[in-house]
Image (cartoon, rainbow, N blue to C red; front, side):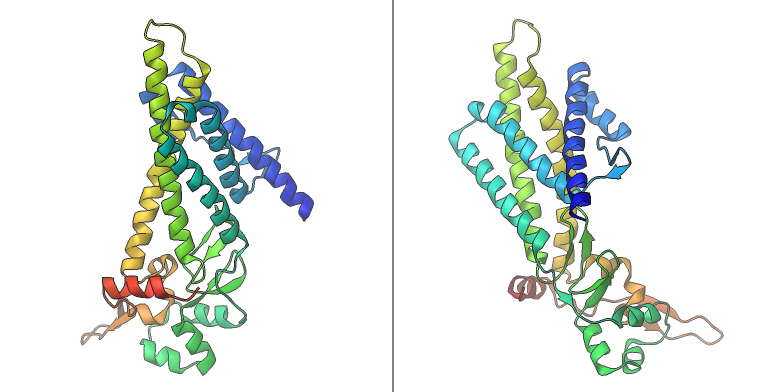
Length: 301
């Protein structure tokens, strides 16, 4: 098992290098405006190498280390001391946060039969009260505590939001806040990197205004700038979604699979002559934005 993890880590390291090399080559031969289009159309990540899939958390760590090295070697000389301090501080905090979320307990609950209960609830047309009363008090109590089953970890997690492949762990009650903080940290770090890389490219072009050949440092700064722009784009969308979920006190898993969970099902009484019972989504946990935010901040993790 340890040998397999080690091989997947090596695969991830190699794929990160190949990905950045591909972007570097694209930036060397194509105008900046065309590089993003080419990357979106062709894909920029090598998911498999020699028949072995890489480790997603290793991808994240490797990319951080790669960008950190490029920043130190190419970028930090051209930017202000304040930007350097912010960027390096963010990178250190991200490394610590990634280790904590990778190795921490998201809120695992030792309870076996709950997945069978959840499966049996799916597709049921009974009101919430009728369904819950049909099961032992311990099982219904766990349902009301929002304990959900993660098929990736084969475990039940309290406050389960989703399984995050990039962080190699479930996101639940114990690490939900850390997950949001890490998203914000990634965006801040990449924004700082984009600012620094932009300044480096601008300075390099000013010094090379005579029309000489573009240097490798300018190309490397441009390629990593493109990579950071793509990263910050999807991370901002992801953060906006999770901010919405926090404000309205709903988990990603609950939003997608609400028909599995009876407390989200609002039963509409059938009209005379109708044979199908209609169900609509209703969030029983939503107490208003301010109260939801308060509960999220004060939740014990």
